Image (tube, rainbow, N blue to C red):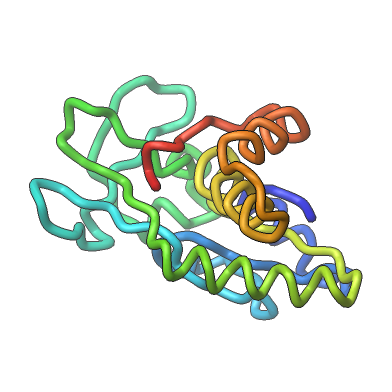
Length: 167
């Protein structure tokens, strides 16, 4: 099982050895057609779910935060806009995992593992959402501790940003 970002998914589009699972809130325009999209997270601002057009993202090479048009966010022609869905606490935005979706994804990953099929679980940058999903799956599949599974994911995928509070 591999953790990655949208660029990894795009690069594996024609690789028949890989199954691709996208856990982003909305299916990216560049998502490979063979990918299975199961949204695993909700963005919440001031107690209500956010519209896709309200997603806050971090612009690469610029520390400023801004509201961004999602068509530009996921447009490969606009490399300045491709970034991670990130949240700053002072924006009163919360990210919450959908436990039902996490269980469905874990069941799907288990079925792929039984066939020994290679799997890429991805979010946009492969740093926050996808690692959390894989850690949840490892804990659920092995009857283990989520925090221990998360540490294992972090050891194997050093870009992982621990977001256990999103559960």
